[in-house]
Image 1 (cartoon, one colour):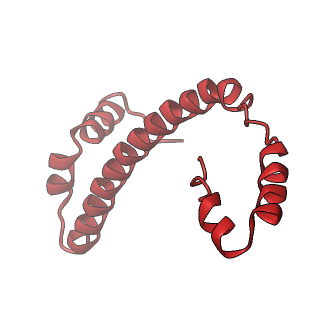
Image 2: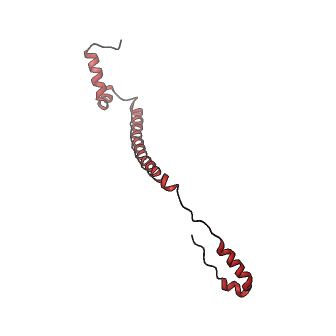
Image 3: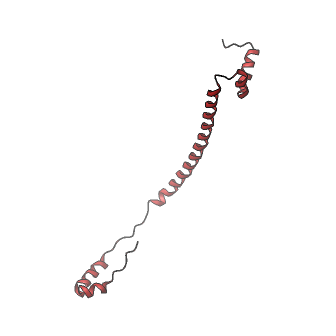
Length: 112
């Protein structure tokens, strides 16, 4: 960022030429080195890669949250109906368990 130029003539009128010329000479002799950014080019690709990884993790997290919220809703629904639910109603929702139990009964496997 460049500073505004100094109006030396304005100060010459109020203070006098000798003092203003001395300040002007001192001001112009100051050399401020320009900042050269050597850090950003080195870390920018790493940062960009982390942003991509973060976005993927965020999407994965949202999907997992959705799945868990559905599972919670199912469990809450099951909890409400559990005291009045029949085995047939339960097996309608979980046909894989009905098949497993039917196979065990058919094979005369009673768990011991």
